[in-house]
Image (spheres, rainbow, N blue to C red):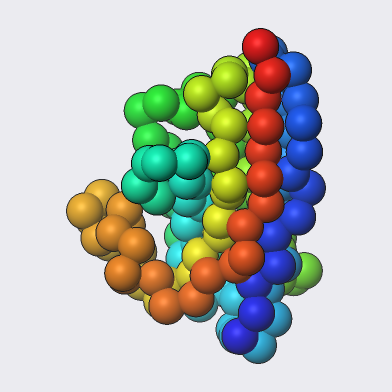
Amino acid sequence: VQLQASGGGLVRAGGSLRISCAASGLTFSGYSMGWFRQAPGKERELVAAISGSGGSTYYADSVKGRFSASRRNAENTVFLQMNSLKPEDTAVYFCAARTTWGTFGSIATTSNYGYWGQGTQVTVSS
């Protein structure tokens, strides 16, 4: 199984960015996908998650209304559209896959994800 995140970069505050995660080696529609981020000196935190069908999503309060997760199962790809970016959104963003959906507690727990991408850097300048 491989997860390849891409699309990160440098953007000014208030700008937008879309990052992608391409998956291979798994039945993609059977996996819920999570987007996590980790800033220097901070723990990895869940930003958004989307169920295998795409019918259910979860967003952290800090990004609700600004970020949107989507997926194209035919292309084995999940996306995170990030709008109205803030300097505090600066972090390395990781995609991760797990076989179940579940409650917030389980969705947000990193150890519940069996597969991880390598991360893509998102930097928001003020």
